[in-house]
Image 1 (cartoon, rainbow, N blue to C red):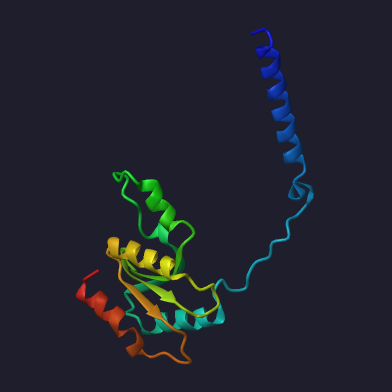
Image 2 (cartoon, rainbow, N blue to C red; image 1 turned 180 degrees about the vertical axis):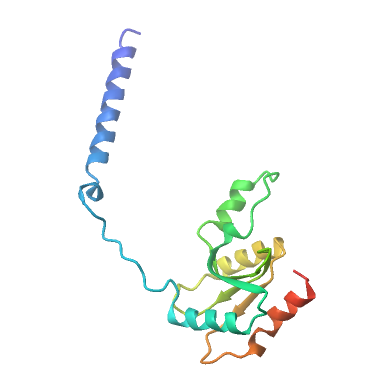
Length: 166
């Protein structure tokens, strides 16, 4: 019993020493300025072309949001007993574009744009994404890059919006 307090004190001191040494050895702390640089455009050239086509051919009452985290679009019900497992399925996932009503920002649909720049998702990741979106009643459209776009490329999205079935 008489050794417990000194042993506990020793363990705390060793722990503090290790914590301080790890904290002091971070090379970023020694840098006056971190070497981050601003990107000129957050979208790839193909995504930029597609974004412009969306803005040109979609109904003017719609607004386009690029690079949306899935957690900004859907949530796991807090009543669920497996909320953390559901949140883990969404972690670090994003959609290329979300189409929303300009006035209310209600989500009309989401778009996956396969420009081949981002790493391809596995079949399981695609299946999980589709299951999440289907569960949240969000319509997913998939597009491939094209040399040129026209209004007919976006008819399904405009029709979905005009029918109000989203």
